[in-house]
Length: 134
Image (cartoon, rainbow, N blue to C red; front, side):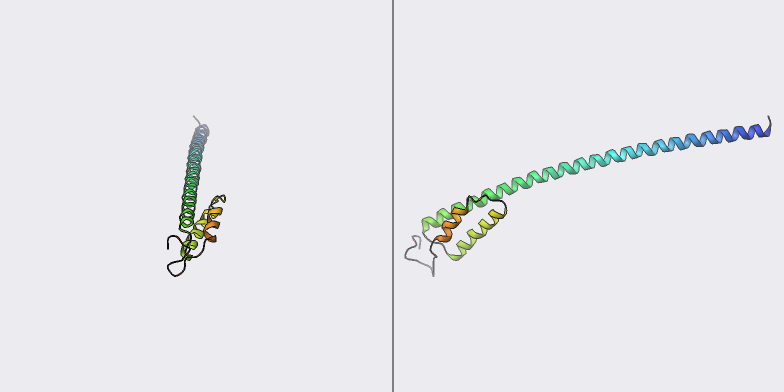
């Protein structure tokens, strides 16, 4: 065989081998990108699931705190109504509970109870004549 023919055959083999290797590497890179994209989608699904779970838990906690605050406000109002008076600290405490209740989205159920407590006479210097519990 002639040296030129051998050189042409060798160049053709190198060219075909190089093309094959490049095609294989490109295929591997594309597969790797597909895996990475799928992993990223899975992480995003997991993140969205976690956010949804946190939102449900937050809502449940908010509703629970609202229920407890509403109960405490109403029970305090009943107690102070029976007692017939409330001191400044007690009125301040129920006002702060109502403020938190309202800020959390309370629907005003406890508004009447708060108003009744705030309208009660103040307990002053220990005892009051019109305060049943004093």
